[in-house]
Amino acid sequence: MSALSAAPARPVPLRPHPHRLLPPDPGVRALARRLYESVRELPILSPHGHVDPRLLLDDEPFADPAALLITPDHYVTRLLHASGVPLADLGVGAGPLTEDQARAVWRRLCEHWAVYRGTPVRYWLESELAEIFGVTERPGPDSADRIYDQVADRLTREEYRPRALFRRFGIEVLATTDDPCDDLAAHRALAADPTWQGRVVPTFRPDRYLEPGRPGWAQDVTRLGEAADTDTSTLDGFLHALASRRRYFVEHGATSADHSHADVRTDPLEPAEAAHLFVAALAGEASDGACTALRRHLLLEMARMSCEDGLVMTLHPAVARNHHAPTFERFGPDTGHDIPLRAEFTTALRPLLERYGTADGFQLVLFTLDETVFSREIAPLAGFYPSVYAGAPWWFLDSPDAIRRYRRAVTETAGFTRTSGFVDDTRAFCSIPARHDMSRRLDCGVLAELVAEHRLEEDEAFETAAELVTDNPRRAFKL
Image: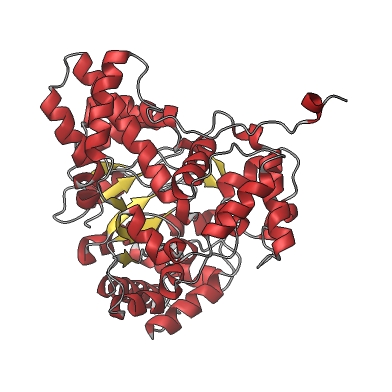
């Protein structure tokens, strides 16, 4: 064998293109670049996500590259699982990993790097590796250990601890997602810490308490009553407990209440019927249909409470949670097998909007995983009701082409001002800047195209680009 043939393969470079995601037409791209540069360094407002506030309270170094970038991120693990990598091999549900285990997980990602081609996950991971950790090699079987060592070395440094990265990312506000019974101790401690200058706010997430047909619901109702120091054996007591916990969240900085159910129907029940169904559900004697009817009535009650306490109501409907029961039983929720359903908003929300759609102070942000309703339902609702905002594409639609389609589907009917601003919806802390950067690039491309078509003046494009990043999320989520 010759010396040439025995030489190791040259590393394949990892160099995210500075103009990625911008329009290909040279003239339009030049304007999009200028628009993007004008908003690139603006602060990040993250009004909906799943980062644990204790991460910032404790400010401990991240354990290892796999625990930071792979294991907690179902966007990453689901495609590996689809490619034949068991979730157990990725550390899902396993707790802390040993160094050998973490390195093995990292190797599995690098060995399957090709499965992410064309996906937003590839964009996020490349941005994280190159721009946060200085990685210059493309992930692959040959580079896996070198990249792991480089990232692991960075994680031992002070400037890579959670608080330092929070400042480096330019995060102005970060909203978490919290159970109504949470005492919000981490939020209180952060707010009281004189060394902490950031803003982290809780979000009221009552889904499990509004689903009478869910196993364990009666026990959750009891737990809610204990947290609110209220008897929840009646519907009135239960509603009082929810209202009390919402006020507690508002006192601790919350600005929104987040809801995700199979649908967003808000059909009202007569008070006596609702009270009867509640007691029957507590006793385990309500039919599936009765439980669904009560849930829809309770969602309407949540809108009423939002009018009273000012929490923005956000709806994320139509997801078949935990689609694969064996995976759920072994690994728990949020492990990559939640699947979208068809959504309907116009009829479903009519009872709610007829009561509260024009009420002072009420705000409703509508998200969907069903693109067919962007232009057919969400944009027309946001284009009439002063309370309604079109939520950004999220989850499966948090991708370049879907974001472009969203802008084109919604803008003609509702404009830019009736949209929510970007929502990253992430558990993966280091993906936050990559996700927001992706959205800024795409929005600047859309604005540049409108200018090129003489549908928007250039000064308006610059103004709108900034508003989409800052003003819109502040307004829609009352930040």
